[in-house]
Image (cartoon, rainbow, N blue to C red; front, side, top):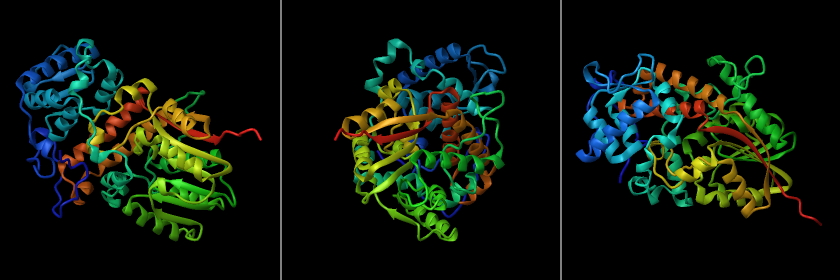
Length: 442
């Protein structure tokens, strides 16, 4: 099936329109599965009954056209506002949670507080489908396309579909460091685990705090030989070079490489940093430290052994590998592994959110590396995503001026809100993980 998770913007920009009931027609060539409403009245009827059950169980307010309520609910409850119930039910009935996402892209539903609604749904993802229907999921759930599996042949295309969208697009909602990963904010008062509520101006120092903690974990200092797997737009390499390290950094995104090289040259570190367009499996050299920020999620579970084998191969004796990884509970990871989701179809093809246990097992089972330290800071990612989402929403006109249509805008709006909800509930976490080689007896 052809999908268009990251189309090339057209020359003619189109401003995202609200409310969604008034959205312009969806482009069939760019968004075939959003433009078409599937058939299947029986499945749609089942989806309607399921929605009623979920709304009642979770206390959701489901508003139908004309202001009617699906089930009684208070005004302050998380709200799902249906504009086209028939289309919504047909999409859910045909494609489950993928249909839920496509229905939002199409404008079939909306919410006055999207994060609150998604947080309510994410709080108990394993119970949305009643137990008597759980056994049918394996017949209903889609499998990832072979063309999106994390093979060396596919990975560059998967990465380019997200990161080669447009440097200008990412610059609209990222802070000036162009860091596209969780920041680390100061702690809240009175020893609270939650970070203090942050504003936009807090994001740059929070990103530097995160990067510096990871570099400290890896032992990066003057003269260190560093391999970075996943360049981003170069900020970590810049911070490492600023410590006097020599850095080789790998990316599969031509757009990222171009901007990272420019930023590195402008900072005067071109002689210390080598940006290579290279798959992690073909990395060469010997390094005192390997660092990687939120890249393991793109590898795919079947390829974790190859990933850790690469780390083991390039680490010099006594070397340290420090990763920043988005994680989920191990049982949820096992349950979702191999299932095609809306995020995989439209945002991150070929990916898999790992569990800490899964990564530790992959390293220990195929290499001499062992997980020796971990720090979790999931609530900080919720803060980071909130700031990105607010910025993205505020700059909707500029997104449209780049040529991205209303379907793309709603897709990214849902992606950022969905991710924020995952971290708010603890369904997702983000961790700093240190792997060191097990010392063998002489």
